[in-house]
Image (cartoon, rainbow, N blue to C red; front, side):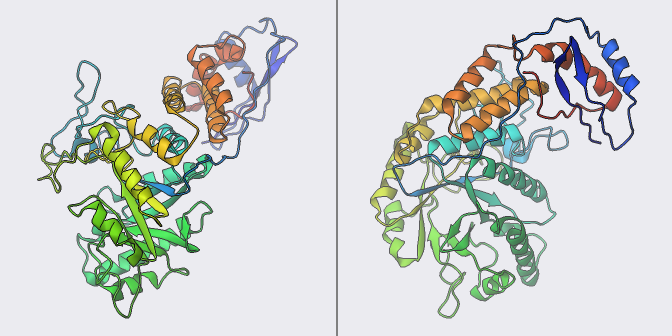
Length: 474
């Protein structure tokens, strides 16, 4: 059911309300509207504030952040987190693993989660639009060019549909912020219940989905004129002929990158070439050795990570795959960024990762490291911004949550979002500071009269919150 109500400015001491109220379920007579106004205690004699101005949301196009470093910076992103509101009342497994309960909180309000590190905003759902907005704005102002989405395919199994849904939610906002994206395909999702033939068939279905829904987007990353596709492996489809078959369903074969040392024999051989290159990932092989082979490939993607400290053993998910690599308060991340710069000819760098809290490779702000990794990234990318704008992005997120039920405040917050995506930071800061200070004296005059009482009454009539046009007296 959808509802539209236009709230207009005071006219001769009364509030003008358009009677074009539409609902798919039923038509509400105008006398019902007037009755509800009377029931809310609305005072038509309230003096008109001549200074009240009509607020119209200005939707702005994103502007690219200037960087002195021309290297493309892509961040690996996990869209697999769920909270109780998105997962049938239970926390998702990437917050719980086998033995943690986020319903338990300490004296500071911190939830018990399966990680040594705690996100500044607390555990979240990857589909939460406020979280997506927060993440992407932080990336933009840190010099990130695009997001590499860890993607599980289209199988209807376990949490794979949720991963797909969350990825789609992320993609919708990427274009608003002005960031690119590509997919990291997880073929290990083909492992359970499929024989070799069925694995190839499912991979073909996944490729068709990507071509139809992602590859054709303007902000999908293209390398050598073709859509970029990474694979975390391959782990299940491991013959070149099978990959030739998988890609046969596509109009344009992607620029396909495998994990380091995973292309020869698995994807390519002397007669079939499906992969143009490889990318770096943390493992026992030294970074120097990996970079020494960069010229063996048409495309090579470097890598930089802040450290590694997984929670698998403590979380009941088995032994650690890799010994802990200390974060050194940002020193390791800085060194790996600089190593990529020293490796001449590396045009693409993957930041590993944005938010793998289970392995402790996150550069997303945490209570333990705050903005350490993002300020290192700002320096490396050569952007003109510093930690101050990152802190304001957190303030924007906090306002989203504080005024989550206030339609009028949300419009102002959305305006601040558009100021940020268009690099109008001074306007964004002024707007955010005003909202934090509670400066609703004039701009929220009608909100004080109508939003708390009028909307609550209409929620009783319609059973949902009003969806108002962008015409408010704010």
